[in-house]
Image (cartoon, rainbow, N blue to C red):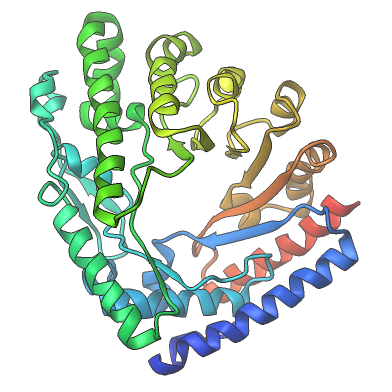
Length: 383
């Protein structure tokens, strides 16, 4: 395992990253020549909770120390380029990130993180009483994690200019989380399930409020950044679109009308994500989001089943779970890859070896197993 990224002096990081980017672009071109320009790209990424253990820091430092966050981001990009044989070409970007679930804090949720970054959620008052007044209306500059995000964004921009000559791009987070995901996190799954029967009117009112606030955030963000308009497309990430935890009937009744609003008010989503099983509602999704270009297909979906029912214009970002990529046999891995190869014959497909973290005893073994899977995947997908 190449650990150079841990010790490169900070002033040399951007130059070293540029060299890795040039090398990774060359490697991609060589694979295109070997396997064909239309091959399935294969990418991977470290789950965020993997980095603190590998590099020896606590996640709070990345969240609250912008100088360290910028430097650590560059070190992670370099480490990945040095060690992982995927098609990722590193880009010098860093986001003003204070945790994956910052958007839920707009509604009064309090979140703490363990030293490696696992989020811990305090119970929200909505869990005990379904009252839309408990959510309030967020203040872009003052509610929840927004003061931390705004402060970090401003400081990162200063650091990017002073320490990296303006070559480090600093991005501001977008509110892409879907309303069902937020509702279940605030209310609890059992509360949501009961509300669909006992309090459907109140449930709809809260869900509509969440969509209102998502749009208001997009407009506040636009004004803050001085952008002339909202982005031409948006994105929806709604992990509780997960059958059977939500039935197709409930999805069509409670969620699809919200998605129609998001498309009408924010613009057509270019992609959709859920960690769960969406097969029974996939046709509904592409009907309500007809412009969708790439559908994220989690490991809990049957790629072949989705390939059989969805129009070929919809691409797949097909993921394979880390327990398979790092712990599965070659036979099991091949079984997972064959349907992805089949889908790639008629549609655009990207393969993701998702959420890498130390599942074997060492990171050396973790990276070795990941690279073994990547090599197998290229052979299977090109055969």
